[in-house]
Length: 367
Image 1 (cartoon, one colour):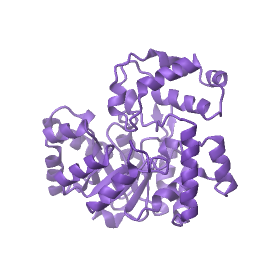
Image 2 (cartoon, one colour):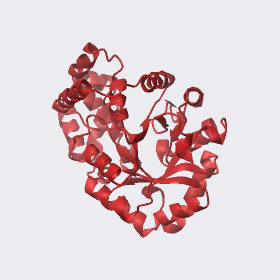
Image 3 (cartoon, one colour):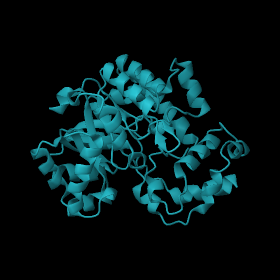
Image 4 (cartoon, rainbow, N blue to C red):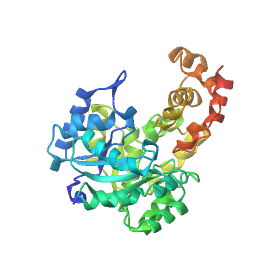
């Protein structure tokens, strides 16, 4: 089965790939894929809506068309916002197989299960379709990606005991966050005997682009690669069998390969450092956006929300002044005042950000 095919615990999340305008840089991606597979890292993760629908296509072109199927492990997802009725599920699934140029998925997950999406999955009998696909050999393992509270996860896993894997947002910043509940969700998954896939281990780059005080601390302790510290944290959990990283270029790939090959479990010293870093980051009051871009897919005003928050975090982290940000990103911050307060963005935000409130804050501070 697919668990045996997995050689090492680092996987490429195909959501934040290197872009050339509107197009994915295939040359760079092919080099990354080849380097990972040649180094024993063979897990790849995609979803139908990633990169405006281009992620699955690039998986087919850059991975499936160039490597033997037995040499890589592929995960895909059924996203609630990508279909309307139960009749659409089979059609969507076959399209995903076709775009990825595979006959089966090693792992197939109900995407972003929460209080809003789970009722739709139940009403459309989504899990029954996944079971059917598995019986047909088109799925090897059924799972869920999850963005909700631990009690809700406990309910879902009790209702669907044949879920085999749970994909959770775990990183050292969110581990004790009362809204993300990483620690509690991990413990709930383990209680139900499920293996865990980690997403957002560096929180969309936020744990790489640290406030100056945090960066200085890690640098003084010899962590010149700040991502390696964050990745070391999540690797230290015994029931984590895969860590997804949104690597965008060969430099990231090489750094992460080294991090995983040189991994040593965290000691008390590292956990204490993580606690200090949490306080530093939270004191900076950065917007916890991971640039997943789910919000932009629904925004009727086409507001570049992740770009606005990324720029704003540069200001909050004292890496840039307001005037400097306006010069560097002349067409970004000004769009914050285009929000019509419809709230569609907040309905899909995995980080549960009060986006409308934050956009107003940006507008007032940066106008």
